[in-house]
Length: 351
Image (cartoon, rainbow, N blue to C red; front, side, top):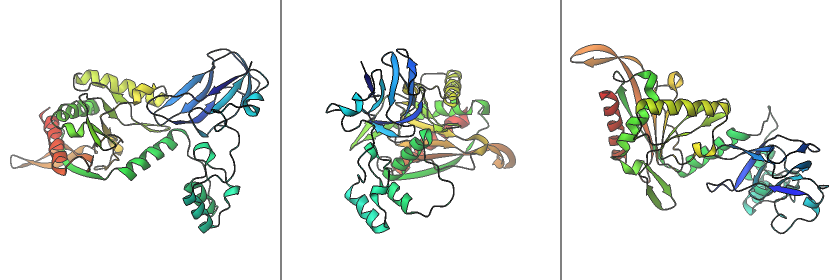
């Protein structure tokens, strides 16, 4: 008996996933619960196990394709033909077979006509093979240089950043901070603690914008940006308000190691209320990072270096860096963002 494995609902409102890597090949025998495929979502990479034992009869979706939840990915057992010849009503649209050519919205068709692009000659990269505006403009562009499609984490980052830039009217506030009282080996956990403490007095920054509602959150689960070989990920440090700096440091180190190894669990990337980012020596003077949608603010730390400052009428050297707060101006006023930034700086300077 053949078993057709569909892309499951992975939670958190996710409606699609990218086939990151097949772990089996057609004709291979698998046991129940053997790993079949890695699925990349906008949160993390999830390994899907085999629901049954048998031979891999058909792999229906190639690596790099983005498909909606419910798409048949692979057939285990049988001769495999049934998955294509006799799909039921729920499977008929997303079976993974080649979509009808030229599927596009009226707007995309108009753009294609203006640019002289034949839609029937294109393979769509949108949901269920739909041709997107990017597909059309890419086909119209001169063929120059090496082309490589965005895949995996890089594709997810591109989509997430595009949405954030498109939807969030962001403003950045910047001020300098004297880090003399901070052990720079504990910089990130110290900043996380300071942010969690300050956010308790500025609830509109520890919030999410959901439709027309601003949802105030009474937990302080802060995202921390981690650079990996595959791109930027933002794991979540839970309960930063109630943990000690050393406890926060241990959790940051654990999450960063897992992020670089690609072993983060989906829940370790979900539910952040505010985000902190620091690029260390590569940070530059300051940054204007994009807000981590659907959050409403993000704090970044610029490069910290010895600079000349005036103390009690004397010029002395001190470790100075810039603190930036980028915020969603729809729901956070500039004055409140500035007050929050100054509150974080006071906590850091007091040690």
